[in-house]
Length: 189
Length: 189
DNA sequence: AATTTCATGTAACCAGTTACATGATTCA
DNA sequence: TGAATCATGTAACTGGTTACATGAAATT
Image 1 (cartoon, each protein chain N blue to C red):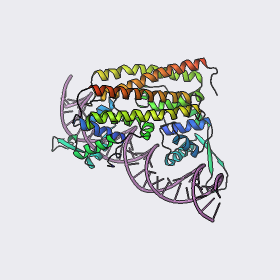
Image 2 (tube, helix red, strand yellow):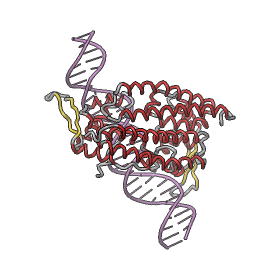
Image 3 (cartoon, chains in turn purple, orange, cyan, red):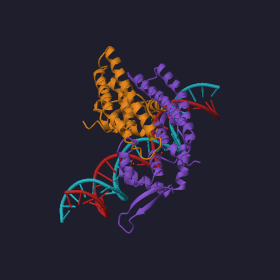
Image 4 (cartoon, protein in one colour):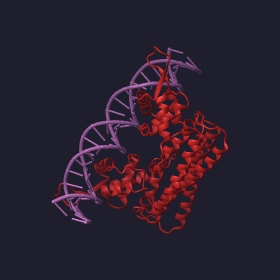
């Protein structure tokens, strides 16, 4: 249950990708370096240690190819414990804190939620996301109206862009909900 | 000149805020904890060390209030070297790399650019920003068309949101350019 | 055989997080 | 005078960055 917040953005991305199909460190590297999946570093110094940590926690397991060789290649697959942790993380309620400070991570969660938790949970996620943003927007408008811009001449414009991004996110979420409702099939698991 | 890329997002935010008016660590903490200025941590463990580093580099200088006391309070003001570094950072050309991976930082740069570099440079910044994004969007569409979504069922939707956010950023940039052109005044320095 | 690309790793460094500690000030 | 709040700090930990090193496979 507190499995939910033990992942960094990178480890969540790795776990999600590995849950879809087994991948090697290099596979992940390629995905991260070829846009636009994540704003992650494709540096081996991040990916391999992260894989190692996931393995130590029992969330992924390496399938060694070509044994008895100095440097074996591995594809990692997700374990049942890893799936549990992923489900817990993706299913965590969307909070205001997420909306304000972890918007990127919310989209990352969305990218995997359908495959891991199924259609109904995906729709629920998007509906709550939209609702939370709609609750939050008025406080941003108030901020702008109050001119609490800390002395920046163009702060209001920056804030305006932020608000607009939230607004299109709401519209997008509602549109995706409609599309999912029309589409066939429940959980893909 | 390689003053330009020595700042983390946090140190850039601090330097920018301090350039507008002298502030204490606690002032910054309040700004970061009261949304929406940045997705920064308001933790003292980040702010005070960052201020210390900026001071060591000679970019800010502390004005000690109430001397001869065990724990003096300080407001930091920006130095000439700090202004130079800020100008270099804000004036750095907008690259594709910035567009793809450091969008948040671009908005942060925008928030301070008018006050530091003046109206003409602000307009230039926004025009280049818009142009770079417009160059980039087609490759995202291609990515979507090519279905290189790494096996995620809803990856295309996530990508779609990304594209829409870029599109409204372009529209916003163009609108702000028009507004700035109408408004009076050049550099505010 | 040599070069390029695929593929995995490590070590030093650095900045942010969390949690804790403590000094000043204000106000009931 | 005691409590709350303002304000500054530190120490241990963690994870990402950069730069480097090297092993295997494919290509020429």
